[in-house]
Image (tube, rainbow, N blue to C red; front, side):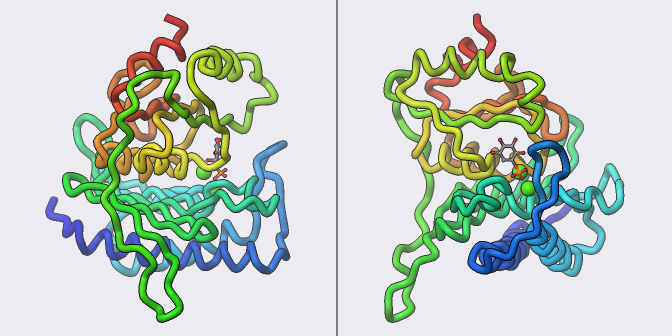
Length: 281
Ligand code: IPD
Ligand code: CA
Ligand code: CA
């Protein structure tokens, strides 16, 4: 299938921008209607506004592609069609608490015999004022959204490279907890506790797409989490790979989008040690 990846990236950027504008408006307005999808799993009207705006842009540009987004699901299910994985607001719990660590995550993947292969990724964090993006084979980049008073960008896009730290004790690692954590806290905390005993620090910041983007940017050496959905990680995983890092499942085998229960991403240098800690080897 011939896909113009530059055109797809432009659409992904435009979609992430309208989504990010919708949620930034909600962050400023402070007029949230918060509903519970589960005991601790929230959704606001801005998750939906963002998703509708993103869907409209992508479907207009690529009507034959499928789109799987968190709030309204898969719009058709053609296993041969390219598929957009969209999280219209990753970090809803943060958002609902006025915590600025949240983002829009947009990725385009194609079906291959081995599973979904992500080709284009954008993660846009409107309050952090950063946009991360990647095209497979062409690197991962970060652009600050801040401008000088004369309107010029404060910083140009820079190519991302994972960190070169190769010892756990020098490593900051990110993780997150699934929404069923109340019913399996012990199981979730066990690897967390083992990791705490070996690394420099563990962060649980509340947005998987940014946890991955921060590994790509060299701000963290590793990340692992279980129970995530494809829209949480499709974009971030490509960012890590394009920044020279490694992404696998919890056992260190190939990560399968829409299938693997655990994701493990790192700068590559501490990967095997993280596999050992997570699995208590
Ligand atoms: C959640 C965040 C969080 C992770 C959860 C995700 P949401 O996504 O990425 O960091 O720990 O497992 O579900 O619900 O805010 O889009
Ligand atoms: Ca999410
Ligand atoms: Ca979400």
